[in-house]
Image (tube, rainbow, N blue to C red; front, side, top):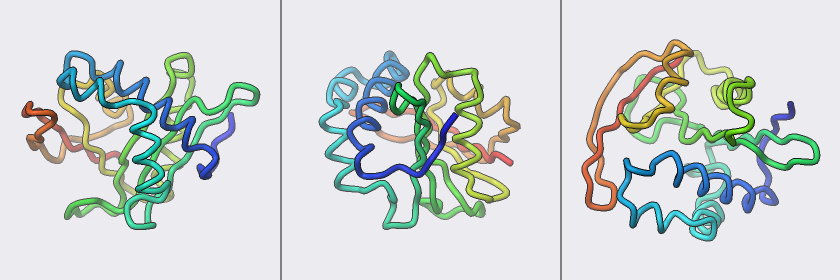
Length: 161
C-alpha cells in the first residue's frame, strides 16, 4: 500500500475517481441534475482552480496508489472551513470499491489527520459511508442543513479521535 501527497499530475485521476464515486454514492440522495453535472471534467476544473492544498494553501491531499493500477483512493484535509474547536477537518475521503475494507480508508484517514488529535468531518445524513466513521469511534458533534441543487439535505458533523 502506497500513500503519498498528491501532485498536480494526479488531478485527472483524482477527478475521475471522485466523480465516479460521488455519483454512485449519492444516487437517490442528491438531486439527479447535480449528479449529472458532477463530471470528471467539472471536477478536474475545480481541482485545478482550488488546488490540491485547498483551502488557501493550507490543506493537503493524499492519494492511495497501487503499483500498476494507479490512484484508487484519496483524502483531502486541512484547517476547519468554519469555526470549530477542532484543529483539522477532513474535506473528502474516497476509496474505489475494490479497495474498500482493506485498510485503505483507515490509512488515508490517518494521513489526513496529520498528527491532529481530533478530526472533524461533515457527512450527509443519508450517506451509507457514515458507518465507516462510526466504526472508528466518531462521535456526533453537530448537525446542519445544506442546500444542494434545490434540495435541503441534512449533514452530520463527527469528531474522530
